[in-house]
Image (cartoon, rainbow, N blue to C red; front, top):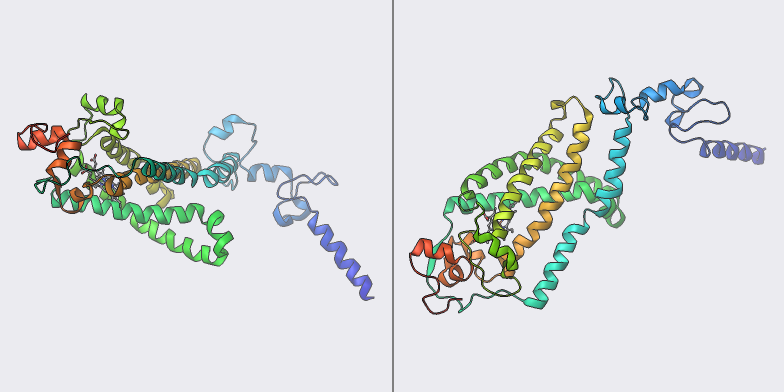
Length: 332
Ligand code: HEM
């Protein structure tokens, strides 16, 4: 009797395990089944076509708004696949690639020293307003970057190491933090824009900076208050920051749009923009700290050494002091 019951149980388990998944066609009776056989044998192909949002081959239908009542769309499937197969899979490699290049550069070239060393004489570079705007942006951005990466990459990176429970707690906390700090980013962006836009317009002298590869491989490069690299970083923060802000608002308040595809596009642009900014940020932090002697003083103390100014921003030095950058000792 016991053996008979076990055999019956085994047959049932087998029958469940071979059930057609999702909306696949059941060859026996020609009727499509829903997930978990929710509608039983009453499930019909028309129902599932409507559930999916219509005929996937009908282009007009695909480019029109999401049909009322549809729960699953073909574009949604494509979006999910793109997010899983490309963004989640490769996103982490870009920042890691930048870190590897910077490490290699540092090992080969070392720290960029101030020619002639510190002179002991300083020049004011950033006022307190500019420095607070910069560090406010940096703090908000770093919090958003860390929480955003946990939300995006928690499943493939945290789950295998720390488990589902830890990932769940970290992701929920990150979500709350991200939602809270997101609006502050918009504030930080506006503040930073107005405090730094002056001096960040591209000039002819920037072409020389590009041709000399920014002086990173030797040679002196002339530059005004900000060089081409800094200006590019500034405009990247502003433009990509606007994309991040708009897409972030849509994701925070999804009822602002009536077509789900705006939200799908927003998640993609938001993730790509974030990866771009985070990757370039590593380069910015490198040059601002260990990469270039004397740089960090400008953002910490608001003052820079005169020899640093002559070496890296000679045109700006001449503009603020009225002296030639090449006249005195210790200049490049
Ligand atoms: C720990 C992180 C950071 C460090 C150590 C750092 C360091 C610096 C330093 C030293 C400067 C002054 C460069 C100079 O005097 O020419 C600077 C400027 C600047 N930083 Fe940062 N920074 C950090 C994070 C950020 C973040 C997160 C952002 C934006 C998302 C940012 C955006 C800027 C901008 C826009 C400028 C002005 C450059 C220009 O206007 O062209 N920084 N940073």
